[in-house]
Length: 212
Image 1 (cartoon, rainbow, N blue to C red):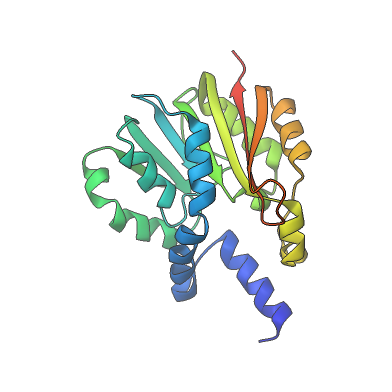
Image 2: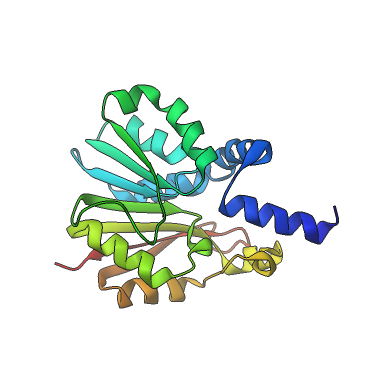
């Protein structure tokens, strides 16, 4: 397999992990995404009793961290990868039985929830794979309670381009573009925090509140 073929395969797996490689990748991503997950966790500013939705929970690192705070009444996740679903159903069997965690296989473009169900929605490294970003943000807006917050974690456009991933299905965004998407989707108080702000490996966390 040539380098371009492997990058294409890797990009596909990052968007929808499957098979033995996908299972290994999910475990790797738990470690690789740890810093960004921590940035998102901090940006959420959790309150006791929050019901949180994570879109694209992957290997479950952020779900674990959310539950470990002891603050949410429930952490709900949606994921399009059947292999990620099976892995996390096993990993979180105890919290699922206690109704602390609830997992669904679903698309971000059509969230399987009634309106105004969540106090906060978060997602990490999924933005690049949204075929229709405005539709996903409209769904996030729909399921959030008025004043509820959306937090999106993502890598810099420069990093994704440097890795060659934008040639294999990734859509990269500048911070200003993400903030504009949220504003257009009727989120207010839109802001961004960065980790390693002056580094090519910068990661960003953009958040906004669902309009009242």
